[in-house]
Image (cartoon, rainbow, N blue to C red; front, side):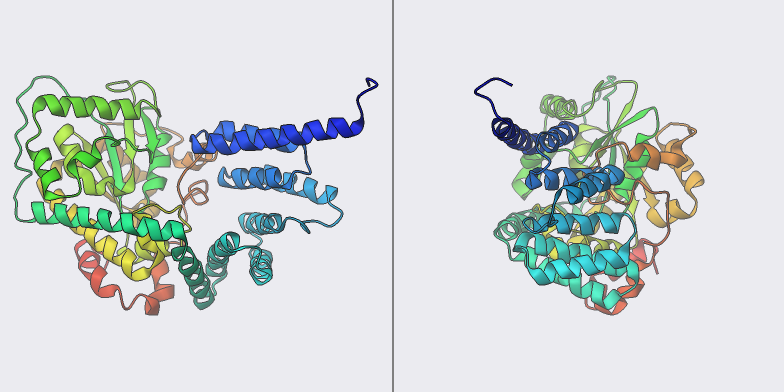
Length: 453
């Protein structure tokens, strides 16, 4: 060691390095670079294992990437280093409760979430703790207590400045759906003319449905096929959607779109897709464009890609709405509606009413697959879906969850789709039937039309 160096200098350097890695990790998250962010988080903890902010970040990333064993080992290492574990970092206690939940220790997790809430470690994480507690109580079979906890979560989340701002944007989204429904409801077709052309237009496979209807499950199954590559809820309509959705004026622009402008939109679409997957358009592998609520933009896809194949995930409307209410989504103008049961049901009714109009216009482009049927008869349902896509069954598709566990899944279903199929979520609404009585009139037409009586 040089004369002007000391252990204290080395420790300070490592603390600075750890903080720099943590800043980098957070910046990479904003850039949607999940794996790179995880690596930077690991480096932050390696440089300074006592940087509890870095430890929390790493644990949170590992949990969302379903790397629970590594997360637990990291947490135990922190416990060994701390003389008074979590005394200065209550959020690590919260993270440990989350990991106990993920490890299946539900009673332990319940007690920890309740203790965390009672100690009030700051509103954002208390809000999240209510969400996790609600899921825990639901799995333990304490349904009234689960509903009480998740209602606390939603009430607190709805009062945040972010949610209030998103609600304003959400009103525009709802108004856009209503404008599209008014525009198309009394028509018998889209009423546009596609210029005759012998040129084949490369098309994506569109995977849509009301959120929490099985779209992420289907995406992971299809991603396990060698001829398919999925775009996981990316803004593929960026720069296009705003031109043709929101008002009658914008819908008129779509109807009057020239062939030249349509080709320019297609090029813009494929440029967006190319930011996330390779070899498009017209590559050997088909692109699966999965974004559930793009179901309200089927007119845009049908105009740009006349041969587009559309896979629509259906699920019992009561289960879909209830599952949305129980999710701790990252808020956006569409998902903010799920902070109330009534507004979630209203959004379901608007979205699926518009879908039913679109379905009448392009029935040959659409393949509907029910979540319940997929769970009950996986092989046959998948084979029929693959037939629609012009593909054959491949060995290993029934083990989709093994490959899913190696991916960064960016949706609220990241915990479920890394497991083999299970039927627990079917008919879950029956445990909460009396809470759904007020919204049943909104859902009943779709319960009937989709065959869920």
